[in-house]
Amino acid sequence: MLWFTSRRYKRGQTEVKPPASSPIRIPCPRTWTAICGGSSTSSGIVRTSPSVSSRLRTTLRRGFALVYIDGLVDAHTISDLLSDSLIGELKQWPASGTAGELFRHLKDQSLATGRVNNIDTFEQIPISLSEGKAVILIGGISSVLTADASGGEKRSVEEPTSQTVIRGPKESFTESIRTNLSLIRRRIKSSSLRIEVKKIGTQTQTDIAVVYLQGIANEKIVQEVHRRLDSIVTDSILESGYIEEYIQDATFTPFPTIQNTERPDAAAAGILEGQIAIVVDGTPFVLQTPVTFFKFFQSSEDYYQRYDIATFLRVIRYVSFLVSMLLCLRCISPSPPSIRKCFRVRCSSAWRHRGRVFPSRRLWKR
Image 1 (tube, helix red, strand yellow):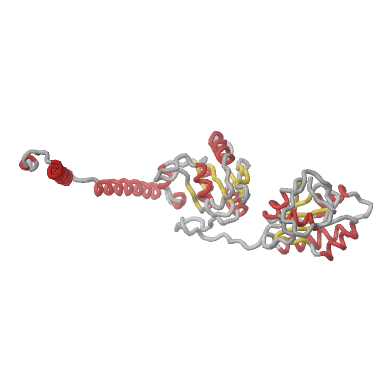
Image 2 (cartoon, helix red, strand yellow; image 1 turned 180 degrees about the horizontal axis):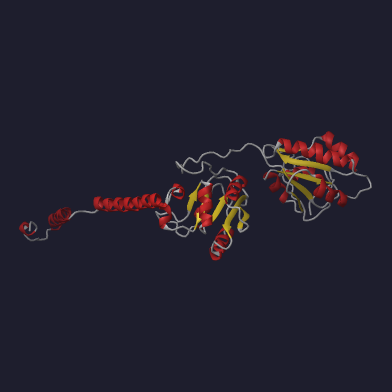
């Protein structure tokens, strides 16, 4: 149950904690303070103007408020939501209608926006506001409505900077998880595609999406990925590297055990091969698991070349890797003359300091 009370707000109070269950009475200063996290004025959080709220309160004979965070919502969506959906419908609502009927009418018919849901706990209100949703509060109802109005400034889809190719798509992932998931869906139009979203981070509440193809990906590996993600207990997840550190098998290893990519076509190709993609909100790099050592020798351009040319280029990469490793070992490994010289120096030094007798030097020159 949401907590709204009609008691007057006490000045100087810094923290407001809602009880387990209380009737909803909206709007009031104490409720607004609880939504803002203990401050009567929270930067960025916007509610309907007093003139609009008073007109609707007079028409509906009950409290009303529309709350959102400036910069996380689309201004046109909020304008349409107020002018067309709410104000127009609520002015025509009969005074004899009950609060439950008004709630169902707004949820099912009136709101001209997608993904309208209702929440029943007070703790979900700040989370919904941070996700770019508009929260609609109506007095006398034990739930509130959330309407998707996400927007604001964000980076558009651009050409990848770290994995460039001559032939192939020029799109890359962005920092928006919704955009990244849509880029994968455009390439894999299969009903077997599974996208399972969860939140990790007690403070950041970061969205994490696990993407795979049912029937192609190994179910045991999918369950293991979910188990490792669910076992993460942390305050914040700001980049996919955080997730990689938590779920990888070996931490102290020079070789990566999880692959990352910023190319949607490479992520889609991995999913089609049975890999599991982990998409993290706020970063353009998508994790792919499981991987083998030879997977890191592949290039995105290999999928767009002729098979003979792609195979030839891949063989060149293998040979170059082996040659470079052998040359590196040859340069750092000591030669037999240097070993004999080092041994002579150490023996002569020990003979001087300890006074021990050693064989003649002629034995060392053999």
